[in-house]
Length: 387
Ligand code: SF4
Ligand code: SF4
Image (tube, rainbow, N blue to C red; front, side, top):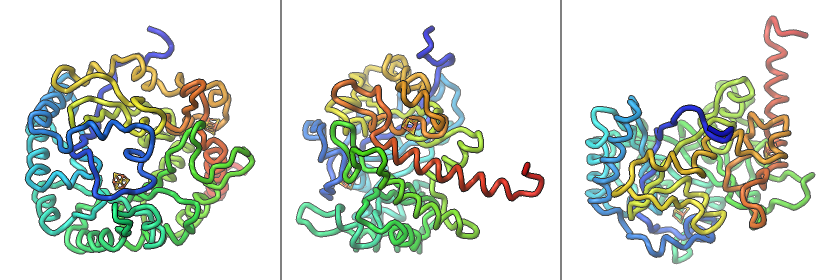
């Protein structure tokens, strides 16, 4: 065994099923359609029944081989609700049968434009949770999240969220918000909060050293994304009772206090997530497609290959040992245990691959350092704290 290999086999506990490869929106910040990887054009639109059955069989096989007591499955796209209610229900049932008797926590990641009463009552019956993409208020959201006709989707998403939060609040998993520096951070945060989500995920727009994210300057002294996130953090952290779980901040605090990370892109805990495309190919984190075409592909297929075969791939084994996968700069960084070098996708540079800090390095350092100072100050005020 080399230093780059983990000692014990790790199991996949989360599976992402690309139920539908197309979308009814045409967001200009979408990593699936607007970046380098155009493979979606060759994929079947919806995952066929036989692929769902093969995936369910492989999940069941994996669950038994690793004696897992639960797994989670995210129905994803494109836009998974484009598959239609019958197809979505079939997928949920077949996957659960495949994993039985082990329970499957099912979540749908949706843009919510089709989230009507029929879908909601079905998800209630099936106990399926919903994560919804919302970038803020109308101006913020419609800046990117528009249909092919150029019309913003905010009004439809807001109506769907009203249906969800009034009739089925127990199904609400949370909101995903892609950061745009042009949107006011606190206004964005407060507009998300209006929908009373249990969690908010703030996502940095995908970019690499070769194709930098919007507004990320070459000058490492400038930290616009950190300044944006810090304004949200300060508002959130200093609100008594903290009205929502913001996973990025929660995980950073958890790591600063010596815990482990459960969120991709922070910390050094191994994250094993298997993605199954509509054609049945098994992929790694599909945001890697934002780095270069084919970056997420494994060449393995649910019809032929068990998920354990993915875990044996050298590239996957290396990623399952995140500390060993860090570049020299990150390995020497005092915040590496918390930052973890950021999302692998964001380390890409055409010249040398992923052997780099994150393109967001200055922002990550600044935001984590701010949270560290804030938490330290708080801890110092606790009774019995060393002075
Ligand atoms: S809703 Fe999601 S999948 Fe669809 S275009 Fe927008 S970002 Fe892409
Ligand atoms: S702050 Fe920068 S150098 Fe430090 S671990 Fe993160 S990406 Fe690497």
